Length: 465
Image (cartoon, rainbow, N blue to C red; front, side, top):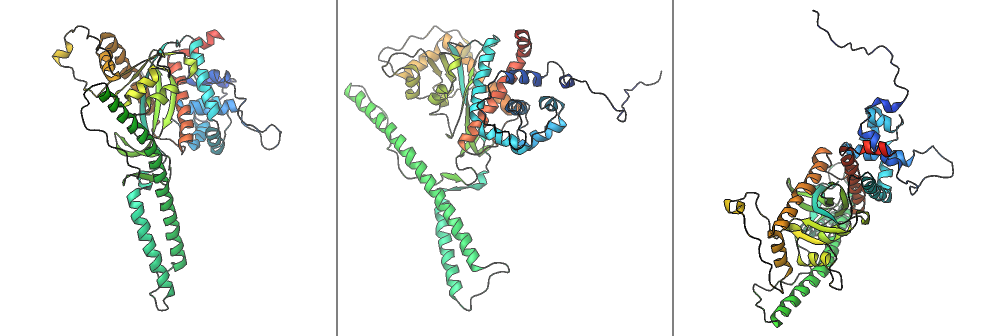
């Protein structure tokens, strides 16, 4: 019998389906995103209502284009524009129109409010489709380092900037002296003394600006650290007055001057050097709060802090009110501080807020010994007046606390992994903390819609319609 092969005919003209939506399968992600975006109010987007100039692309289409692109790992505006020609699903989404990269980039940069409103609307959609139950929720909180659109090689330390300023001042003096000498050795071809002086003066001004920014940053940090130091000293004094033993050395007072190795980046001055798995990189700290049952992101924000020590309170505050009251917050040891736990669990009048925090007190290994596997009785509650740290240790040693805290590693860490590995988002394209925050909101919005599609929301949405 002769071999049978599929006939590949590129010459015969084909009649495509009259409905563009038939170009991709019915359960494709692009259909779900289009249906979801239809229910989002885009009236807040600024458009030209005078009827002059070129025709404008509908804001709903640009929103859907950005969300679908980010959900499928296409982030650059030029690559998104290219996909409107090459990607069949994107051609369906844009109805075979092709917005240019400048239009796409401008829309992304200027519509933080729209992305935030869309983020909330998607959470409401999840609740309407009964794919998430909000109210008395348990959330897992974590931060992940996302590279900034800046190279660490474009940064300068406070100490090095000072030495460079001194060196430039000496070089300017030498050039001025050379200009006054009639028989001075000429410069290389194409170089002139005035231009070299101007170049060094411009470099000196940039370095002085960098040092001033680092000094202002250090002054702001000093004010916060001083308040924290005074609080700790007052607490130690109060314990002495109660007759309690105060061990350890007294905390050192903070210093107002910048650290010699504190850095300023010329490309994105608002980004910070942070420790990552790939070494020290220029980054932002992207925070996410994930509801443990649905694994939807219910709160997001971007921070400049290189660690999570002071991020628990603002990240919990960033959770959308539409998600309902928070019953429990799960976080790793990097988030723990007595002040943060107290702020979340108690109102200003010391009455409980109804939210319980579960944070590890120190890092622990994943290996469990034989003793860890043995069944143990419930630990006794610490006697009053117990400190927050003692209560937290007891909370995590109980069976209920251990069971609940295990959900942290199973929820928020996979979400960060999906964003970085499956969606491929590892670097911000926009510069500055506000614009990076806009892009992170778009990333979280795209993740939530992708998650809802995985939960078969498209079928439920079609039935509801």
